[in-house]
Image (cartoon, rainbow, N blue to C red; front, side, top):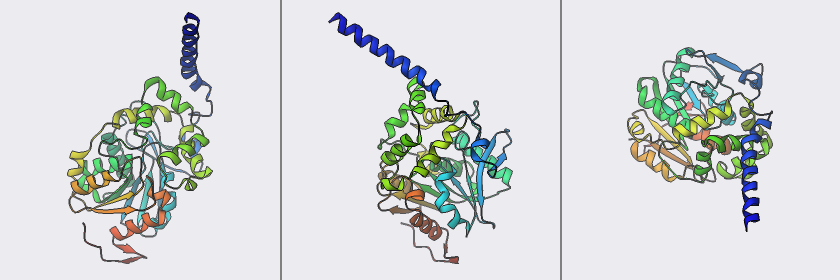
Length: 323
């Protein structure tokens, strides 16, 4: 019996040492700056706090549309929709501080309010007075917070499988584990294109076939940037239990809520909470779709946005009444 206890304790010590030391051997993670990973053609703008923000800009005109990604995501999530949308709007997709190829400052407070301030600073630098903001998941929470803080800068609001209310959807607990001091670092160190593919299939997509190797690689590449894991851990600690209900109720701009019918990360019931708390909002549920409609069902996503914005094939259309 004593011998068995000694063996168990020894194995436990070895396991703890493995968890502590393994992250130091992942030399392919967090070993480059964002500009190196993004490439020579990537667009960056420096904000007033001296941090660099990566963004994609397409289209022209005075109808501005700003796209904001979710947790552990980047501008890549909008790749399939930014082209069609830019035929009608001046579209900007940005990587929030700490994500994608943007800087990951150690002294930045990674929470909804400071992300919203960063979006405002981005708009100031780009000379954007007003815009429609569209955000997916955590980016939806940022959009809601922005609309509450800066209503005078918002034309319309588009919330896509948005964060904002406490929930316990599939994947909620693993996300919380990422914020644990030692365990979180270890879990991030296990990241790879293969692991990212499995994560996306299990948490974010209804159709596993949509998660190609290219898509998984794009999500993984963001974690090659210095400070990516640290920023992600700080973010999940700050926002995991956040409720934006008070901010959501302050939204007065016309609002479209888009939700994947099969979202297991943030359940469709949450869409009803948004719909109830935002007066006059329009709710569109996309069938056979998970947490990322802009990636899994880009045609349906674009169609919903164009109708909401009063555009169809380049010509104005009449909007159906809000529910």
